[in-house]
Image (cartoon, rainbow over all chains, first blue to last red; front, side, top):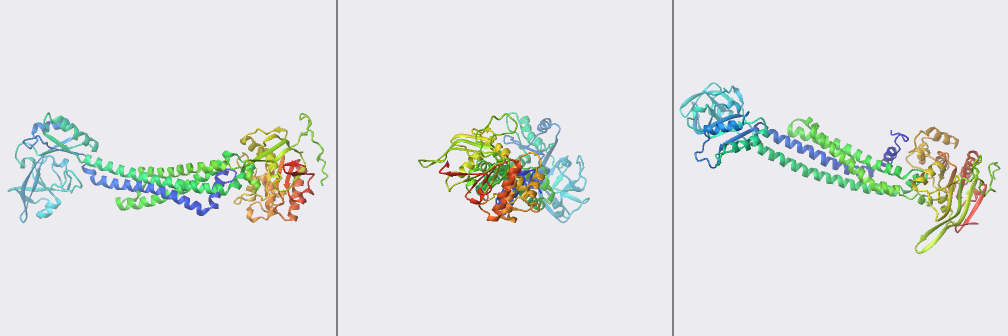
Length: 375
Length: 242
């Protein structure tokens, strides 16, 4: 228990809050709701954003370079590839050709867009077999295509009449970017000049966004012969969207804490008016104005601390559930960003409560001790 | 009533304060007037009042309702400031003290006892006695418990006011008034809420305090019983000392 002489303001505050348990509880409930509004919404927002980013995560470091609107040939030439390589020093540059071709096994036949490149290992990962680097022979099939054709690793398929051995089955890639490919051949399997697109693998999302700007600037002299696209842009737009959404929701949460602050102001004011006589006695027996203020402020702050703590506990429970459901890892609720939200909610609760206590505290401190003696 | 040797009711001229024992009154009102404004009427709650309490003296202030008794107590207790005149506490002119100075002077020099006790309901008897000291450094718990023992409440230290009888509550209030070793104890109708027997015991307590501790006691009251215990009685009618 709080000792009366060690922390008199705190002990008086605690006893006074305890004296009106129901009223205290209701005022604290407002704070709890405010803290949950801030912290739980923040944590949920983080979880949704993390989930969305995970989906896009693997491919956001690529830049696709394709023929621009002034490119009359509709292809990217060898010299342009050289220019891209110069512009994107350090990144892996993968020229690709694609064409609609007929792929068939003994029993099945499909007409699909086939991609030809010498460095598929930079773009794809194999779920079975190995992707040769550089790739000079064989064929890579997506899991779906292999299933459709009824072939497995090591068997042979024919593409437009030529036979290729299946050297690897590709892992499906999620989201945007160079996924969705079903058949990959060596570059010279499509025998013509130039390339349909060039994929640049950057070191990260920011680097990809930079290269998406640098490459056209370097390669295009006057006409827009190449254009670029990077999923990192989309990812950033999505992150930005979530950040805005979160900020808006946090704003709503903050408003509910302000409302809680107003209700604390109301409750404290009522309680100060009720305790006029008692406060008058305190003043009469030599308690100073600022000491009375300290008592009332401690009461308001304590209300914020109690409500804030309950709110933090509730928010952690909510965040735990949300992270378990959305991301499969409930402990992500203790990620540093979420701790920030919890801290923000708690801090704002204590701050708003203390501010709300200022006026009642001042009011109490100016209570006229003379009135007590009339009682 | 009391034959205590410290009583010196006849003195009304203050000797020079530089010699040995403090011969000046603990509290003194010099030509004090207190006016209240009520609408466009001005009411003299106190009119040119001269009043003094000596150390060890117990004074009753009597008078009908509205006679200015409470105002006198408020001014003596530095809860209110006079419209004109001089208030002295232990020889110091405190008339122009600001709120902070008056509060500190009350804390140091004055103890209050109220008609309806005004104990803090959630605090124990000991804690209630400690209220005036709660923002002062130093642990006075032993002293508080000692005071309660002497008031015959040694077995009620941890009781809350609602677990105490009226007389016991008033004893706690008296112990609270004494915790800071005041020079002056002001009592507002101290027996007003007590039955006659209990009132008598409380008044004996005041009598003991004033003689043993050399404390000036002023009791404002309607109760004729009080005058049996006091050294002298001041009658106040319409703000004028009779």
